[in-house]
Structure formats: structure tokens, C-alpha cells
Amino acid sequence: MPDELLVIGGGLGGIASALRAKAAGYSVTLVERLSNLGGRAQVLTFGGYKHDTGPTVITAPFLFDELFSLFSEKRSDKIEFVSLKPWYRFYFQDGSQFNYGGSNINILEEIKRFAPDDLNGYQQLVAHSKKLYDVAYTKLGDIPFNNLSTLIKAAPDMLRLRADLSVWKFVGRYIKNSQLRRALSIQPLLLGGNPLDTTCIYSLIHYLERAHGVHFAMGGMGNLISELEALMLRQNITILKNTTVEKIKTEKKSIKSVITNKGDEISAAQFIYNGDPLFLYQKLLDPTSIQIKIKRHHKRSMGLFVIFFGTKKTYDDIPHHSIWMGPRFEQHLTEIFDKKILPDDFSLYLHRPTATDASFAPTGHDSFYVLAPVPNLTANINWEVEGPKLEKKIISALSKTIIPDLKKNISETHIMTPVDFAKNYLSIDGAGFSISPSFRQSAWFRFHNISEGYNNLYLAGAGTHPGAGIPGVLSSAKVVEKLIT
Image 1 (cartoon, rainbow, N blue to C red):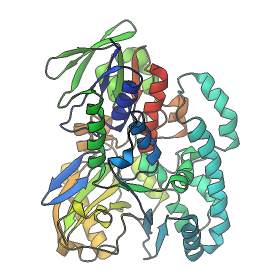
Image 2 (image 1 turned 135 degrees about the vertical axis):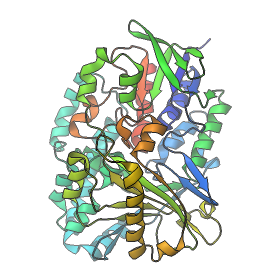
Image 3 (image 1 turned 45 degrees about the vertical axis):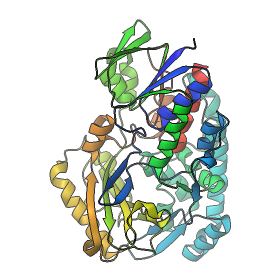
């Protein structure tokens, strides 16, 4: 009999870990507390509209291809990935717009139109981004950082590439136009980080997008999750939904079994945890043995405020992804991340899947979600009061700018706040992306992929190495695969 392995949590990290463990010869069971797999990648349907609730941007399609190829299947036979153009449209308060993405020629022509003096600087930025990508992603992205020696070996490259710089300072070395600098600095926000203090290692995203494009899974992330679930079932992976692990039983330095909300005890030889590491160490395990690790990772990511809505008409001039930039940048981020107050203004990420896939809304309608970074639950914010207020302000701002007459055409709204993230995903303090990706919380300084204190417990997901975002989460499963084999 092959060794039994239990995966706790059915997000993308847990799904990828289960598939890789199965391919490595383990007998795999996966437990998920929600009624559907996907973690944050859930689906809301109401009033004829469909909404992905979590990630929508696929920047490393080959990582999904790998999961299917483990079992001699092709991802493209199961689900279509569509390349987007532009990747993002940025809207600024003076009414100007910047379309980012497409071919290299498209990007350079748009920069020449928008900020011609930064054309050469942008090319230098991408060249530096490629160096970061070659080292931090290609060379180190799926390497375990459990030992300090790994960090020491990587240090010369990291110092040479100025990993000590924040993304904001890194971009500022090459880009002088204030609006373009803001646009090219927002990537950490998609991973839960503050551009003002997130290490510029994450600026490798610029080259990652250039190398592999930005894609959308037709049918949405829910459809992709369904196809991954079907792949697991074809490989005889046992999936237990609506099953919450409430207790972990240990013996010395090993995990022996878990107790579920249904009273069942599940034993295994190896365990993989795909969830917020802070919840694991604070709520499921005795924290006394790993207090140093918990204290080191004291800084959570920001929270997220999301409005899902439909419109009774289509807005054909709005692309798939838009970034609505607020009037402030540095001060705004400082209020959210450091001062922990809810700013009067906001910046927004707008997702219109019906720009690519009409199945998300009734004929002649559009489906949207709009997301605003906000403080996590360490802030003193009453979301029952502030949520409806913020919703009204955001809808009004969009109605006056990029979605004309939205107030007249909006239909079927639903909101999520950091309270929902804490409740639905067991995320400590309702953080949108577990711990933040600052320099002191990256690589060896991040939660290790093999747990502190236990020799048969492994970690995959946003809170562990290499980090949040779909590429990071899927790569964490590759790290775990190396450790368990």
C-alpha cells in the first residue's frame, strides 16, 4: 500500500499539492471545509449573473499545464485560456487612460503616447525585471527555503539585483512620469503587499507577464477548479467537502491524525496544510513551540472590500481588467497598511468578465466586480456600518467616470468585507492574502514549506514560500513535492 497523505484545504495550493503527491505515488485524501473546492476562488451566482470571487488573472498558464501533464493529459483539451489585450486599462483622476499589455510593440507604442520620456526607462525596467525573474522565479521559485544556508547562497544574487529596494523605489529608478510610475508599481497589491515596502523581487511580474501573457479561463475560475477536481477524481483522489479540521493530534514531533467537525478521525503518514499558516499555528497546533516563527510573521496583508454587481446594459468600451487610480498614492497606502484607518478616497480594481465571456451575464447585460484595498481587521472599523457607505461611494465614483449612469443600470449587488474573509477562509484578521510580502517576510523569512516542530507536516499556499498569487501558490506545491519525495 502506498503511504497515505492528507491535504487540509482545497484551494489552488491544496489541489496542486494533491495532484503532485498522487503522481509521486501517495494515496491522497483532500478535505475542504466549504461546499466547493477553490479556496478564495469561489463562484457567486444570483439574478442570472455569475461572479468569480477570487483570482481572475492567469499569468503562468504553464503551471496549470504541468498539473494535467503529470497524468498524460492536456489542459487545453479541458478548458480554454484566452489571452487578454490589454492586460489592464488604467484610469486616472484627470481622465487620462493608459492601456497596458499585449505585444511588446503594443506596450512601447502606448508608453510613447502616454509618457514618451519614459520609453527608454521602461525598457531598462523590463531588462532588470528579467534578471529578477531568472533568479527569483526560474532558479529559486520552487526551491525550499527551509534552511538558512539556502538564503545565504541566494544572497549575492539578491544583493546584486537590489532586492532591498521596495517596488515603489525600484520603479522610480526607471520611470519619472508620476502616473506611469504608479501604474507600474501596483503589482504587490495583487499579492497583498504595500508597494512602498514590498521587496522589488516581486517586480519580476513585469517580465512574467511579458513572457507568458495575461489570460482568462473561459467559464471563469470556477470552471477551472471544476476541471481540476475532475482530474483529481479520475486519479482516485478522495475529496471530502464540508469537512473542517478542528483539531490536530500530535505525538512528539509528528502529526498522527486530525479530528473533523463531523467527529471523524483521519490518520495519515504525511500531511499538507493549505490555508493561512497563522491559523494553523495559532488555532490548530500548540503555539508555544513555534512562538518565534509566529512573532517574526506579525504583519498581515491588507483586507479587501469587494462589490459584485450586474448591469442591465453592456459597457462594450470597458476592457476585461481596469485599474481606477485614486487621487493619492503614497499617503493612501500608508493609511491602509500602517495607520490602519479607512481612507476617504480609494483605488479600485474592476473586473468585467463579460468582455471576454458572455456566459457571465444574461444577454444584453454585464457582470462586474470591483475591489478596493482596505485595512484588515486589526483596524477599528465597523463593517456593518462602513460597508454600505463605501459601497455607495464607489458606485457613485464609477458612475461619474468609467461606467456612465451606473446608478441607473446597476442590478443585483453583493458585498464582501474582511469579516467575510475571516469567516469563510479562516484568515487571521481577515487578511486578503495571509502575511504581507515584505522583504522580512519573503524566502527564508516566510513561513517554511515544512512546518516548524513537526517532521511530517508541510505547507502550501499564499502564506508560505514563494508567496501569494496564482504562480506563487502553484509553485508552493512544487516545493512541497520536492520535500515529500
